Amino acid sequence: MFCIMKKILIFTTPILSLVSSLFAGGNEYVTAEIYDSLRKQVLSLTPEQLGEYGNGPVFCVTMETGYPEAIATVVAVADGSASLYFSNGGGIIGTGEHSEGRAAALSVVDYSERFLKHTKSKKIFPLPRKGDKQNKADEPDGKNYAVLRKMTC
Image (cartoon, rainbow, N blue to C red; front, side, top):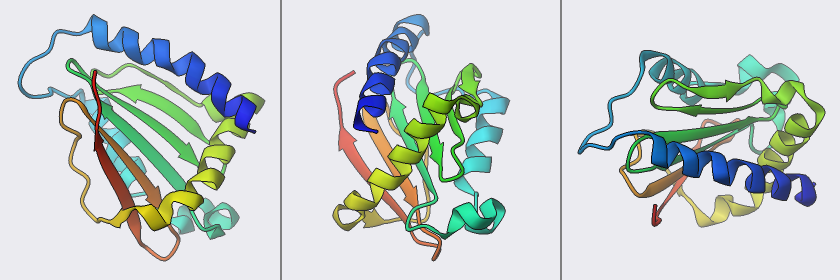
């Protein structure tokens, strides 16, 4: 599983770097309607919507990075769904339909449980600021956890 995650990270890093170089930056993000809709959908996901997949310690992991020009959002769900989408409206949805994408999503969800004790519970998730990374892990008991850390873009 670690090998698959490593491959996914190696693959997505250049894509995220490309996103950073493609879009003109400003002081505030202007987000596309489709991005806002997808983000709202994932942030309001409940374990009940996932049925049997919502019973684990973590049922969804959302990772957002605020690049100077756009936000990149990566989502991994306990049912194997995986997506990558950008605040300008672009993205890759349905990666979990492929065996390697599904395995990587399940691995991320499973692995994230180990880090919950190092995070703070949070219920509101604003867009990340430019240069920040925001991670969210959802537990079936309704707790939401997030870690913010500064990163260089």
